Length: 240
Image (cartoon, rainbow, N blue to C red; front, side):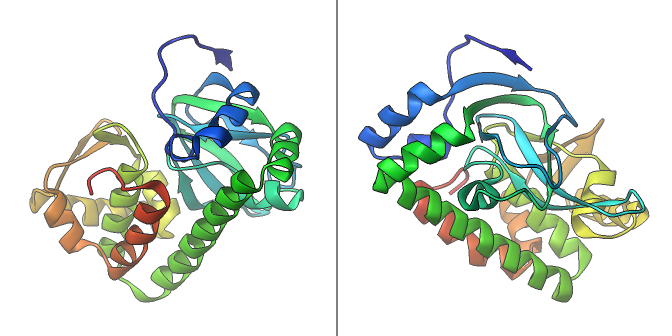
C-alpha cells in the first residue's frame, strides 16, 4: 500500500459527521491506495486498522475449511470496514478483501477507539452505522432464503452502485456467484436476461446500470426496505 497526495474525494460517513467530530477525526487518517483482491483483515485476526473507503470497495468473506468462500457484504464510501469487531474489540469473524481497487482513508483502531470514547457524538454515529450493517446482514439472510436469484442480483448491483462514486462497477460473475450463493452459470443466465432487458450493460469485468428505474423494478423488496435507512444515516444517497 502506498500513500497518495491527490485532491480528496469524500467518504460519506466522515462527510456527514458533525464538524467538530470530523475535525477531531481527520488527524488520525492517512490516505492510501488499495489493490484488487488485497486482504486487509484476515479471518480471526484482531482489527488493528479500520478503513473509510473513498472510491475503493471492500467485501466481507467467510472462508470454509475446504477453501471455498462466500461474500456476505460490500462496504463502500458510505462507511467503515470491520466496524462490529472493531467496536467490540474482538477478532474479526470474517476476512476483509478489496473488491474494487481505489483510495481509502485508514486509521489505527486503537486511536479511533480512544477518540470515540472521548467524543460521545462520534461514538453514537459509529453505533448507528453498526446498527445499519446489522440490519443489512439480517435482510440479506432473509433475502437469500425467500427471493429468486435474478431479483437478488438486481439488489446487489443497486447496493454496490449506491456505495460507489463511479458510474460503472467492477464485478466478475464469480464474485456475484459468491454473493448470491449459486453457480456461475446461473449468474450468467440471470445477468444476460437483465442485459436483454437493457437495464444493465457489461463486459470485461465492468457493469454499468443503463436503466436504474428498470433495475429497481427488477430488484426484490429488500433493496427498497433498506434504502431509506441508508439515506437517513448519510443525508441522502447516490441516485436518490
